[in-house]
Length: 234
Image (cartoon, rainbow, N blue to C red; front, side, top):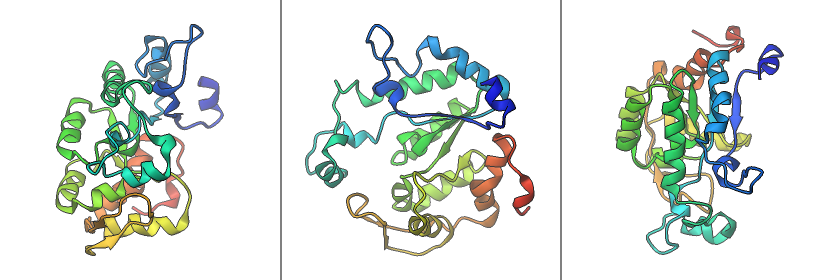
């Protein structure tokens, strides 16, 4: 990691395989907060690079596949995404492992991908943000959850405007319009861009420019080293 940072690396990405499928030499699942990994998180803090980590998946993937599961259509069309308490462990266990790791390394900045899978419970996410000041969040793939609760989401962005990063799962230019529309406009009752989930309508948050600038680039410049600041307006 030290060599990588010397050669220009600006952060560390941890995929969801940690907690899901990574096993040790004995064939046991490696927990997200496995103590054997502590030197990695500590070193990231020493090098002042953030760690973006994707842990688990949306909780409905673990829930019964019935009429109450809002991801039913997604699971029906993508059955490999369905999980259970033994595949590999309950959802809450994975999330708790992540949070214990965050708390164990308060000098390291962690970016919890997908709003930490709490975009549908901003009150709980707010509590977690208070408990872990080293936790930042990004909203890749969960903009639809924010767009259906515009008032609560706007209040959340106002409160945590210094710790939210723009996030996007993949480079699909046509999809960015949805993100910009939710964040910037006050449009009402418009659709999401994918057919198999988020079949509800959304509303714009109408965030002011000072918050938008933080979300789009200022917060990233603050925590990610080596970004060329000259390419961004004040």
